[in-house]
Length: 119
Image (tube, rainbow, N blue to C red; front, side, top):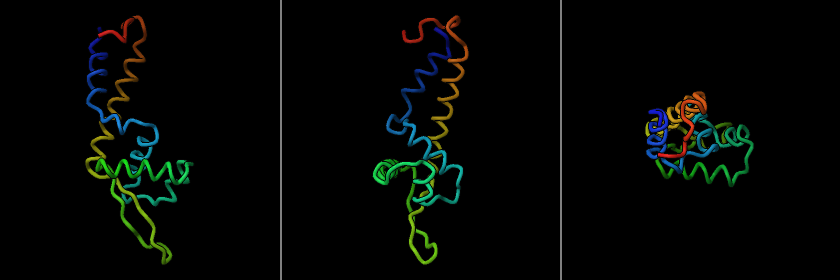
């Protein structure tokens, strides 16, 4: 089997499977982009999801130590602001590298690795 396939499979085993969801990856990417943090309402608007689903994902990421929650005052109101931790940045970089491997393996086509699922 192609070395890239072994690398892809080995790397996928080292990823935190609780982070590899579209929602959580997008949250980490947004927090990576907004280095000063992003407000809950801005995240909700960008992701177009319910409060409950967003809070659940944010709490999960906080519990893993990938993001932190702080309060800021905006127009005399306290708002929750979320930021990426160094641990979260490292995990996001692992996911990005894994996605690059997926792209590489997929672009090689069937002629180079006809039996992807066998080890």
